[in-house]
Length: 247
View (cartoon, rainbow, N blue to C red):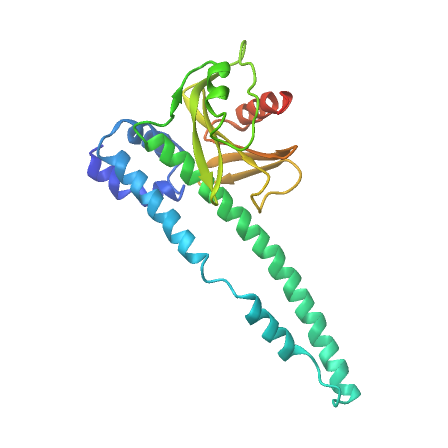
């Protein structure tokens, strides 16, 4: 397939709407093509910029305060109006609760979309990792002084996983570690951040975003995300290995 045909499907690929076989073929192509790789990377960066700009237009506390004051019933109103306002308040509370749940779900979806974009951008980069090594005792010390936290990496001996290396990355302006593992020619990203990223539940979660499986959990004061197009069983196994070591 010519590059023009790949590039025509770029947005569909980034949205995770291609069939699974075409997603795998696109992954393989974008890693090696000097024309498509920078286009994919640029498109991901443009999406991140647009999302960041959208966050600037959130209601201010002053606006919320004025709405709340407008909704308060006046003392001169009769009992009927008071009952009516009580009903309105109940409806408002239900609406606020529903909006909160929806907002939290939206933050989580936005978070996972950013992680999927970071994963794709890394695969599209000509230099996906800054420290290249299969030795965990080389990769872990490289992060010292670059991050405000430490972590340990699992021993992969007698497993199907290979550590390719790592780099420093950012999620919602929070620095973290981005590690790349490989299992049966599938690349898996492992992200580790301090527990300052909103939108993740307290318990272990499994989600799917843009044809990628995502496993997330909290461990002490750290957040872990494992993402890739590998089988769910592989992501579970790598997650178990990560959780078995002490941070």
